[in-house]
Length: 411
Image (cartoon, rainbow, N blue to C red; front, side, top):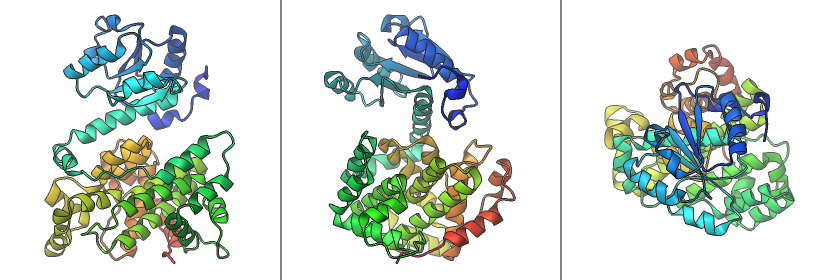
């Protein structure tokens, strides 16, 4: 583990404005002192406290804690946490465990709290706690609480995505194996070749081999497209999507490509740009989920939009009290996507709801989505107040040129 602030990854991505009390239960004291120093570099206002066992939690006033980080091996921790959750159902909690210890991990799965490897570093740990807190905030919305029980057909993580992710995590992972896995899924293979040959990706020649397509797209974009295609295949019979499911797919890819290009232009960081692509291609999956689960209600949206001259977003709010962006983010959270991606999905129509003060994935996705809708003839305005707040008031015209360069249609 790193021992200096300079070595901790991406502190700006997990910064908060409010002080937190984070209690660590059962962790090794030496590990705790190290993680405490690293967390303080990321979150100077956080107070990290250590309880060697659950008995010590009472003296630490755990009921007022912002979050708990529990060692899965701590004696009596599971039973204590089960009782603690009855007093604080909204408890923000992470479980640290050795995933090779199947009996212990199996014991904790029943509680439903996120589990992280024992060796997780401070940046991932802090980001995970913040992600949990944001998700709790979204799910506390009364409108979301009304809708979520109606979402019975939940989007399953595509099997191909799990296979590709496992291959990428392997020390011997290779694009050849990934290409082979994709070839085993004829629908996904055809879709990927269609996408890479479209104007979106500006390939100099026609690509007919899945390995060539994988090399052009790169692993992160492959994973994002597998998720997107997987969701669309699960809800391909969804009704009420305007203008069509295929048009929504093309729109999603367009936004992803543009958001990636904008982010690369602003940050010069390829990893961040790939996250922008993922956020962009997934930003509208809530539409598919809502239309697939609530078809009779969702089919009313085009009628309401036409009769009152509303956007789809405004019509959703009038009918459901919530919108596809929030619903999509809440359900995508179960796939372990990062907080910046989830916030870009949740607020791509309402960026002012974020607390961002600098360029972020949300800014790129909001702009790319607005440009794409405008090109499609729909009214979708840029939130100038938000861009002024993050110091990007003059950036939109440059970004619009980027959009025009990336604009394309599926072949």
